[in-house]
Length: 449
Image (tube, one colour):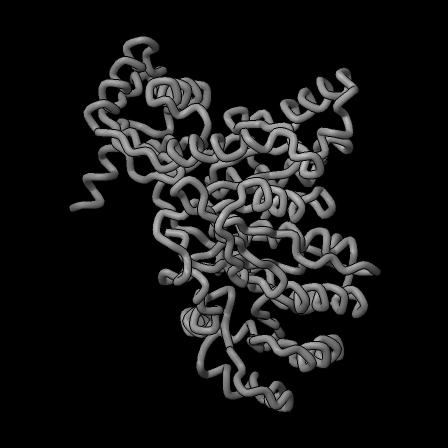
C-alpha cells in the first residue's frame, strides 16, 4: 500500500491571486464517513492529496509566512526561495484578471534558475471565451505552457491535476523493497539525533544493510534485514541551511516529516531528554495521528539525565500532559550515544506492527458490540434511543471499524470514547491508533437505490 513516494508540491504566488482557493479546491476531500479524531488540530497549510491513485503533499506558502497580507516583494521572494529549495514541483499562481505584476516578474526570475518542474498557472479564468483575451499579457513570459484555471469555478482544474500527476516523480526505489517490509519513518526536530539513531540501530544489529536513494534529494532510506524481517528506515533529517531563511525552513521541515508519513507504517518520533517536549514535537505527533500511523516515542539523550531522578519524572509527566491523545504509543528511553534502551525498540516495532495490520472476524466484532451496548446503553438522541445495529472492520493500518446506527449524529463524544476503549480491550489493540466510524443505515440504503 505504501509503495509510493509522496512528492511535495508548493503553491507560490503573490497574496490574493487565489492560492488558498486553489489549495482548498485541490484538497477538498469527499469523505463519506465522518472521522472525528480527538486531540488533533488541523493546520490547513499542508494537506496530503490523492487524485486518481496519485498522492502528493500540497503546501500553501501563503500560510507559511506569518502575515499573508503583507505584499512585500521581499517576503514573497523568501517564501518562493524556500519552496523552490524544499518542494519537488512548484505551482506558480498568477492572477488572470490583474495581469502580470512586477512582483510576479521577481519570482519568475528566481524560478528560471531552478531545474524543477514548474507549472505557470493563470487563475481567475472562468471559461474558454476569457482565455483568448486574458492570457495575452502572459505570453510574453515565453514559457512552454500556461495552465489557465478558475480555482473558484473549477474551469481547467481537471486538466491541471492530470498534468501535475503526470509530472510526479516515479517511485523506482520501491521496486527494490521486498514484500512485507515494515516501514519506519524517523521524525523529530533538527539536532535531536535522528541520523545517529539510525546509525546506532544499523551498527547494533549487525544487519544486512543496503542504501536506497530516498524520495527527496537529500534523504537516504536504509533497508535492513533482521531476524527474518525487513525494515525500511526513512530518515527525514534533510539538509538544514543556516541563515535568514532559518525560521521559514523550520516550518518546511515539518513538510519533510509529512511526506515521510505518507509512506511509512510506523512513525518513530524522537524527543530530546534535555529539552523536553516542544510545541513542534506535539504538532508532528498530532500529524502522525491525523494520518493514522502507528507511533513509537523515543526519548533520546537519556544519558544526560541518567543521574537526575527528579528530571526523569518531570520529562515523563510533561510528555503525558502535552500529548494525552497518544497514551497508547510505546514510550522508550534511549541514548544514541551509549546504546542504552535500544534492545527494546524492535520488540516494540513488532508488537505495534502486528496490531496495526490485525484483522478480526465480523462475528467476534458483533459480539463485542453487543456486550458493550448491554453493559452501557447508548444515549437518547432527539427522544429516541440511539441504536447500534452491527459492526465490521473496513480496513487495517490503522484498524478501522464502522458501526451502523439509526443516527450517527446521536453518538456523543463520551460514548464514542467508551466504545473505542471497549474495542481496544476486547481486541488487544492497546498500542495503535484505532478508528471507529459511525454510519446511518438508511443512508446506506438510499445510496444503493
